Image (cartoon, rainbow, N blue to C red; front, side, top):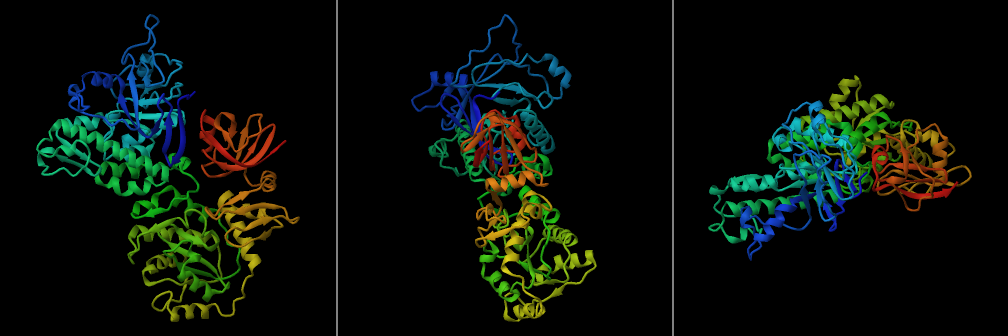
Length: 615
């Protein structure tokens, strides 16, 4: 059971949390050796530096203190247990065995797990990772993973899956200013400055984009206290001090990005400075189950699509899968394929306003864009369709063409249209040509020179001449049902909203039943459905799979904490709409954890509760 660590927010596998020592520490954070700090304080000079440890002054802000208790020894009957306290994280006794030692041998020499009443960390390997009741887990041999992308990803993901989700993961001897953001992205909560210090004493000046040899530096491109002494007084001891400050600053930047939900945006550029870090990010993208379970369904932060790596992001792949596997077109009209717009949602842009004036509800509009793929008009508000910004060059890369064409092809194989009108500029033709060939079907092209010129818009309007318009009621009903399909699965819109009455305007559509009782609303921020109690009851009684959170015998008010969860659907993701049920209560709200994390955690908010009733 975790007593001294709690996760407060998630950004994929990255987390922000709190290590609840006597002086709480926000994670991800640096860990300093408490015993070494005590020795340093005893011999420190007036300038606060430690002459006994190479003149290295570790920043105090956001630093957890750790003490190593009887490292490498067995905890035997005649040996007193470590005398931990709440001011520091005590690393419990363990056996340090060489990397690659068989799991059976490691288990044979491992001391018995101990139940202690102070903040503790257990040392584990990839083979012995399990729930030992500790607040943190130290991955032995972590330093040997540096530079080996496959081994690093395999070790971190397997260990993270094996230890409790509400415990901290500590990788010692690994972190540098250049790699710490990648470590956090993979799921690491605690790091130390050991590697940065050693590299400094070897004469390596570390930065977020790599390193330089101390002897090659003509100036100091940094404003930290160590660098303020000037180049002439800057030796290896000062270099080590600088490295620690640079690491702390890089970790602070990563922590802020996690809080904003934008660590991946930062990492796509920052990790490219070292080949193994780029390889780590790309290998993590292949760990779909690991990342998808931990990636929120919705966010308010804008996604910056600045590199082709964005295409592999969970949010992008999840949207494309749901559009091509769950969404079903309900309009009996031609399809008009249009380009995206810089302004989001598309309907607020000038260009899409011009497209609308030409179409006039006589066709179904779908936007084609990189990196999202295909966005039906009903899902223009649904995350991430209105939450991204991409680099516009007027040229599609081969990877973009392949991805978007594949999504459009799958979309058209699932949805049949009497005619496909491609109102797109010339640079979109590699995509549409590829789809035409794959489907053995000809599209109608209406752009003369640019999609928004008078001639092009006139061609589009002429092509739709004679088509009957669909009404406001049909548009509203189809939007609510399309969002339900996307959110809950194929056919959910029809099952949940039979006899639907829609009020309000888009965005903010309200779904009501035949008696006028409100069932749900389409949220403006995320473009997803939020149920009322009546809607939640209908969901439970329908054939649509329900995302349930089973709780103990109490009535929640505002939120459900993890200790109160008895069981949860394993498909629940952060941000999902969930039904909360127990012997005394029935409610509906939004998930704060994934389903598996709710079941395995002993701390943290499992779900916010919007509406609840006693049963």
